[in-house]
Length: 467
Image (cartoon, rainbow, N blue to C red):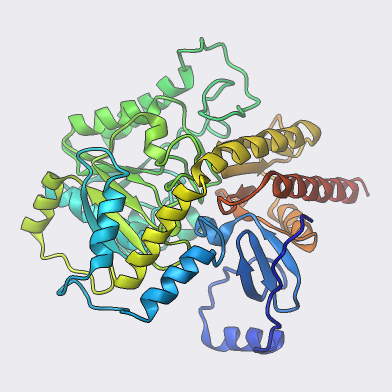
């Protein structure tokens, strides 16, 4: 494990058994915690986490792709403490400088005409508001999203979220329709040149460099959805530039550009969900939509925007903002509070001052190529994909069938990584994909350690299989 010059405080709070007891009695019964024995975390420092027993872990999931610049980053901490002693909350019925300072900084990072900002507190809230904007502006109802998409779990956004574990039997999210996800690894079409990534699928194709048959086939499916599943005029189309919860799924190059054109022909607006992909994580660009050479009508953002502080935003055009204002007196008590905006400004400054977007590109590419070697070594590693510091490693029974590795086997590999000091995430419809998304301060030595841990865990798994 790479060295760390930080010493955590001694843990002096609840015992582990007391924590389990309180959780069972008083907190949600929905099982979300990783591992058979969930970690009890105590402190964080940059890319490191420490549990109640003082064990150190390399955090390669960053609080579900949320801690963008590092746990308890010194500059962000200092700004938060200063604002905490000055002013916590006013609500939007009064002005305060932090929201105006932040709005100016954020708007400068977005192209025209995306210049009007609505502050909220979470990604679900942001996507809720974006749905309302799309319907208010278009005067239509139907909204399309991909299968495998995750856009939140509020009653409204559950209609857009198409991952089975988040769906429910009660009515929710009316007027939402799903369309085929253009997944070039698991879907019906895909080849060896489809993705905007240093690593391509193992599937072969005969496409010329400037042509993608898989993209054309998936566009036909999108057209079929427009022809059969929605009204003649629609409200909009939601897309993550890279799907997060579904296991870092990338679309064929050029797909979103054509899909946006088709949506606008039907009177709809195009929404880019940048909750996981934004703020430089993908390396080559600050926003994920820029990697597809598209200009959305609405952009939603959360998670990395506040480095873990509850904060989110919706950015749109003056025209769409005006349509919303004519439709509803939108108000958010905590959205854009002084604490959030001061922290948000500090995060933007750290990303720029410490060249974290460039680090995402350099270290992320290094890591993708390293993980691709594991795919070549192990039959159960079916796909390695992603861009910058957003990477998916899909586990399969074998590369020919591409059937997902059984959950209990993936669970054991996941546990083994944790025991060796590496924390990674999970994703995919069958929870078959490891999600790698560390804070953007991560280093190449950290990557070397993570790759060797995963190699060791995979080797142990193959040895267990052989027995």
